[in-house]
Structures are given as C-alpha cells and as structure tokens.
Amino acid sequence: MTMAGTRFRIAKRALTMLKRNLFSVIILLSAGFSFGQGSAITKDAGGMITISSRGNDVRMVVHDLFTQNGKNYILESGVKYQTLYLSLSGVEFDEALFQICRLADLKFDVQNGIFYINKVVKPVEKKPDSKVPAIPELEPIDPKPAKVEPKSLPKVELKGTLPTSVLAKRVNTRYEKVNIRYLMAEFSKQTGLKLEVDPKIPEYKIDAYLINTSLKYALDLISNAAGLRYRFTDRMTIEIVPAISLLSEANNTKKSDTKSGH
Image (cartoon, rainbow, N blue to C red; front, top):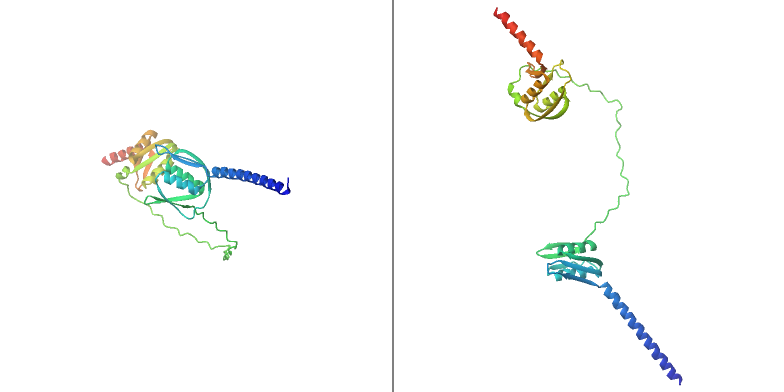
C-alpha cells in the first residue's frame, strides 16, 4: 500500500467523523431552539384562551394572542426581547393580557379599538441631598415674661321668667345610672337653657334613654320617677326641686291669700 493511499483513507475517515459531529450539533441546536420557542396559544369555542410559553419572546406571545383573537395592537419600540414562562388554561382575553403585561412589566392603553402596548417606566429614585440645612438663629426668649392680668368683667344677672315654649326643645340621651346633676347639665348643653338642681336633692342615679324627645317630656318623666318637680325661676332658669318644696310654697301662698281676705 502506497503512502498516498494511506493518507487518503485517513482523510476520508476524518471527514466522516466531522460530518457526524456536525450533524449531532445541528440536532442539539434544533432541540434547544424548539425548547426556547415552544409556545402555543389556542382558543376554544367559548372564546376561552390557553397559553403555554416555555421561554418565548414576549413580543411573539403578544403577537400570537392578538392575531388569534382578531384584535388590533401596536407594540411600541420600547418593548425589547424578554423570555416569558407561563401556562394559562381557559382564561379570558383580558386576563391573559393582564398576566403577560404583569410578568413583562408592560402596560397597555386602548384607543379607538387599538391596544397600544409599551414598557412600564419606573420612576428614578432621587438621592437625598447630602447638604445639611442651616439651622436658623433663634431670638433669645425672656425667661420672665410680663404677667398680663385678665380684666374682670362685671357679672350680669339675668332676671325674668322663661316662656313655657322652651319646653318644646328636643333632647337626646342614652345613659344608665347617670347622676341627676350631670344629666341636667347635658340638657342645658343641648337646649341652651340653664337648668339648676336644688342642693337638697340627693345624688340620684337615673336611667335616661330619651331619643329626640321634648324637654317637657324628659323633665316630667324624671320628676315623676324621682319624686321631684321643676319650676321656672325669676333668674331665667328652670330649677329641679323636691316635690315637698313646691307643696310648702303652695300652702304658704294659700295662707297668705286667706289672711289678706280677712
């Protein structure tokens, strides 16, 4: 066998091995490409959508979604290549689009039936200013401020009797075992009248559940329950007194009238 024949056979064998290796590489590349592009979007008879994306470019997924559903869209130039992994089954178009946009940081706007899809622009956080603000100079405070004596106003004593029409004013209370003097103070606050309680009256505790009732009804109810009475004074007030006090006054008035008659 000549030297040339041996070299020819070696070269042929090397070429065969190279072809086999190249074929294996092509198969592997094809498999990898298929895995990266393995995506399917289907739509059933009821209009529900199924998506399976295994590393597809989000732009291709969006395109397939819109074309298969017969909708118009424009993908802005800011949307770049981005792999997408998701699997959705039996969802509506709006839900599918929302999930795709959420995963890929996209947003969309609809104008005249056209979906405009763009990248979400995240705000740039401003770095805090490293400069320390200057502290303003404060004026010294006088340690002993001058005392201002309040001017005393002369007390004005009201005289006269309230009209009985003030008893039509409305009151609202929801109290359980409340002090009678506290209750009268609450009536005064709600009606703008001054209600007084005779010092002889003990610290009665009263249940007062009165919903939008007249002042007259409230006073009648409390007075009858506690054995009290109320009267109009000449000081423009209403005074709560023991029932015996009114009875004594009435008797004294009757005696005075009798003596005057003699």
